[in-house]
Image (tube, rainbow, N blue to C red; front, top):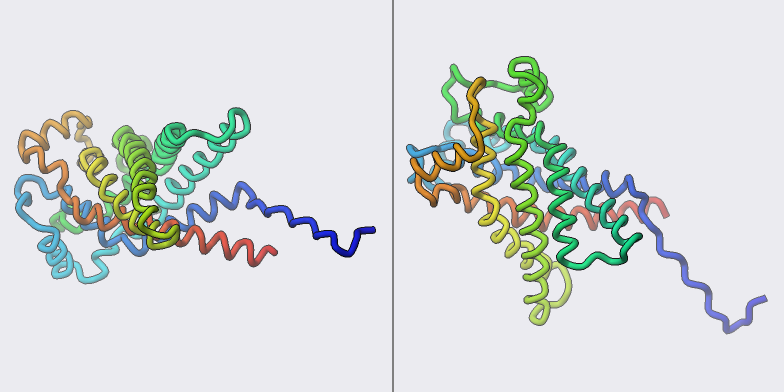
Amino acid sequence: MSKPDDKAAPKPKRVMPGYMNFIIGGSSGMLAICCVQPADLLKTRMQLLGPAGRNLSVFTVAGQILKNEGFFGFYVGLSAALFRQATYTTGRLGVFNGLFDIHKGKWGQPSFPTKIVIGMIAGGIGAFIGTPAEVALIRMTADGRLPPEKKRNYKNVFNALARITREEGLFTLWKGGGATVSRAMVVNGAQLGSYAQAREMLLPFMYDGLPLHTAAAMISGFVTSVASLPVDIVKTRVQNASKGVQITQMSVLRDVIKNEGVLALWSGLLPTYCKIGPMTVLIFIFLEQLNRLYFEYTA
């Protein structure tokens, strides 16, 4: 029998099942993209302007969308964006957690450089899984700038995937897959490294809470935007190419620099930053809240 002054044994810390990491991770991404989809659409439209639109500002492009397509024009392609989060974000978080656990079990806690490498690998694999949704998203968000006779008029992401497969072949769904994977690896590496560094630098001046996480995420978003935009622009133009047009990443890169100038590689920097910064913050906010709800309702 226990003595009266014996302390009760601490309750073991509850562990979330592995499959819930996939579900909650994907759900967090889907909720976040609903908030930042207008910025993502603006970014894509600006990347596809070409030489004729090099002097157009983000506000001019936004005004044109509002005038020609209305408010809901900013949410064209939302179904594809949601499907992309359901595949890409779920995939990369699942792979990251899996590789992290394997490393921890065999060799102990990963070092910071190892975490960056794991993040890059996870981002690449997740991007490959999510490339079909990415192709559909690019096509759908670009449709509004095309003349009526050239519009694809996809009804939703599943209609887009079915039509692309039927009209252009199954492997078109992975068009620009190399560029997508390259971008994802750059994004994951830049995001993880710059977020950790910004957090470390700000910690002496801010308490460890939401304001610190938000500031570090916004700094990380800017660094990630600058690092990833050239790859992102190449990927966007490869995936939006017309049927039968065979182009490579290097040919697109050369054409952009030759015809539009080096700075065109950072076209759409503002809307990209307006997406990546808040997207990072929102994903973590939704992730924490969904984790809390899970433990509350399964207690």
